[in-house]
Length: 441
Image (cartoon, rainbow, N blue to C red):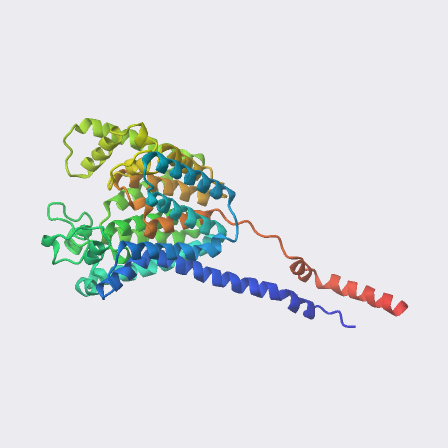
């Protein structure tokens, strides 16, 4: 009998080949999901410009379809912590609905997005696929952004952004703005002007697939956070993500992104180890600052960056017990992030979600750095915007990357693979022993 190893190795290699093919397919699907996450509104805008009228219903169905695509990956591994959060928050939202007399569907949607993408990232659990997915998205974003920058008239012939936002109910028709096809914030007003390279780039702010420059700036901030969180051995990747982030910040003229990325860079240089837990107190300090600005500004609030912060402080000062626990229906707080968060989710849920972020078992320094940078992004964006934190096109990317930082534990090797890995000399010796016993018989 021939007890050589090739036959056994061929059989045992089958699971390895199937596993590699399955992993490759998963990688492609995940990258496709992330690309769809950032570009679905651009696709809807294209269809709206060329005959298919967009609507809130179509927008909601598109988001539901993307979230549904995540379910096969989510179902592979249950996360008890996430399930507990879902159960608690769902119960609180239902209780708030009973007390307020109305169910706010948007709160369920705003919570579903981060939990779904975080769960997806956890079940993928590989830093390399996170970087690959983000790089692919950056390629799409920069390509579309450069087309908009250099061929604006041609670009808006395909993407009538203003018409799209009017049809989806996010903008009211403005007769004086009828000649432009960009978002209202796609052009810097003459009195304000562009901050970054005004003589070279003019008043136009690029939005790329996000359709609004604010979201492009937020995405650039997330890219910079990911790059700055990488280890020193990945210096080339760090430079790539930071440089493309700077390019996107410049073309979108995002003052928020410029400020936030500068702060992240300072943190990367000077804060390490346990210092990365300092952002845990940042939202409380931010709320105190907003309230102080609201008090000092009095009744008059000017239309400026300082005025927007003061307006957020005024809104917080007007909160009562019912608003703090989200047991009453309140007016929307479009540019007041903390006021919107607390009035929509309630203080208990808001605190639970914030401290849950800091209870995540980050496995290494890279993951801890990204959590700290993400926390700074969250804290600062809530100071100036009410809804940007929950936008699928940027929030999905942020929480997918966060989930990937919690590297998925390696599965135990299959018995067949263990036999295949045994040294050939041992297998030959076993074969010889069996042959001698057969001859003796």
